[in-house]
Image (cartoon, rainbow, N blue to C red; front, side, top):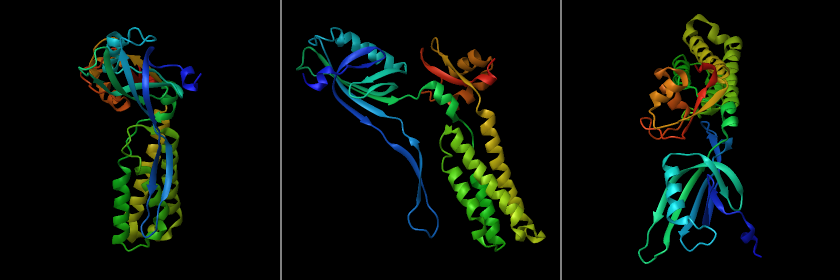
Length: 296
């Protein structure tokens, strides 16, 4: 018997279907740090990206092992995709992961009289328990302007910039992840701590910025260091337990905030923590993450 004949069929959220082709795309998130007048760069690995799985499937009335494939199972799958349901996706050659559908196509051919072909694209969904422990939403956008201000003042006062290499490197590494809504808490905390330590070392050891004419440089270093300390402390404060709220019926994000916290003003926070396609119409079954320590 061919090896593939012994594989468990593909399925999503308990609905099995006949998979004819399957492509699994993985990748590594990275950021290359580039430094002036230095060739190449320093790659930093930020962790594995979410898997993207593309499946082509046949939905036919002639499939003996899938008696309800067309039209019942296909219609039910489409309904679950539209609701944004997260469920178990079984990949025949790999196994089962949590996922949700991001794209789906049905192909009707009039020459065919027994059903349709379909193409589904799923994205891996991280396990909620590990996600709430390791991720955090914070705003580090203040670091970039403060670092720029420091460099401007240094150049204006003609101080050797090599003294500040550790600060600029740490600031660049921290701001390199600024566009992400959710960060790995340990990674963010470590980068903020590195920047704070670099600022503290310069403030304590570089005699030239202690001289009265260079007070602006000293203040810029301290402002940047204070911002880094605040980010590190904020990271620790926000690493609080979270919980999952499953939307029971069609709701807006303000309705969800009232249900979770008795406070519609928490809607903006929930939008930052969750990828919600339509905040005005969240479908039943959609799972919303929130901080437990602030729950009503």
